[in-house]
Length: 432
Image (cartoon, rainbow, N blue to C red; front, side, top):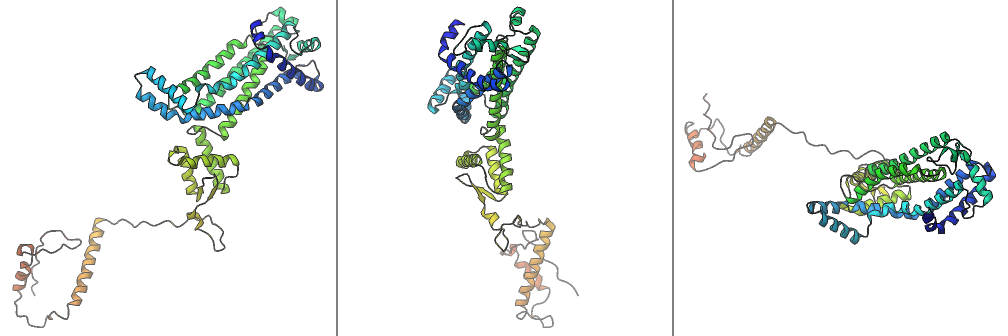
């Protein structure tokens, strides 16, 4: 413990000073010796630290998005070197170096909190042992030792003996019940936060080292919190439970409003965005325009959900622009009333011709041929002799002459529509 205290002594004094300042504020409301004053001071310390870590959280999100865009390349490397794990790892590291990504960036907020965690642990352990640390003097030390959170002293642990707990003015049962509930809540919130990231905001179809790392964190961290939590003072458990709840809420906000491309969360977000834009006819929020701008800029590289979003806007008569705005498309603008206001009525659909059966097509062709033949007969009516006029050629000779014009006689006639191709059998002359 002395080694840890010496390593983090540079931050112990600032942490203790912040706690004392918050204690003064809450002590004026709830009383200086109450658990509410000291507990809310720790919660406020967590919130202050997490606000300071927001830039790191943004960097973590960007790193996660960069890893997501690299997953197709990672999959190609895995398929190419599936029998050579060493070469596969080398190519992966080369890809990380070329793109400037780091698979460990998701751990940055946790690593950044570690100095504050150990400093707070050292301060609370000093309260439990009766040692003054940082700016916490004797009077503040006595006040902190009297503070109880749901019956458990601020500096009590799950592993403390009955005599140690009694010296802090509590019972062993109260301490173990409170610490056990807080350890369970702390581990459960950590597991849910990581599981939410894996199931909603990450594409799990591609197995990459990044995915394996996230899966490992989902199971390892809750177990670590459960194992080491029995040695944490109640004040430290309050710290970790608060920071886990903050992380869970912060991640839920990001997943809901700025999901990772290609994830289930993006599909749900774009579905909500489609309804919102079609109802209002435009993108009203700046964040919405940013998302639409990024989708339009991708062009043919859009994923399935992004293409569905663009098609949904087109069906509603809207078009996404390169600057992220949404305007009325030309096809919808053409449907307007006389005063120029757009209407919700869609353009009339083009009617497809009804498909005819084979017999109907043949009957139609025969009718066309008959009409064509009648027209030709009318044109030649004046030149042909009438039935009353005497023909120089006997009637019996006409079929023979017609037979000479068949394909066997050296000529070929085109088959009319509805007739069978090939040589046609001549009709016998009618007998009166």
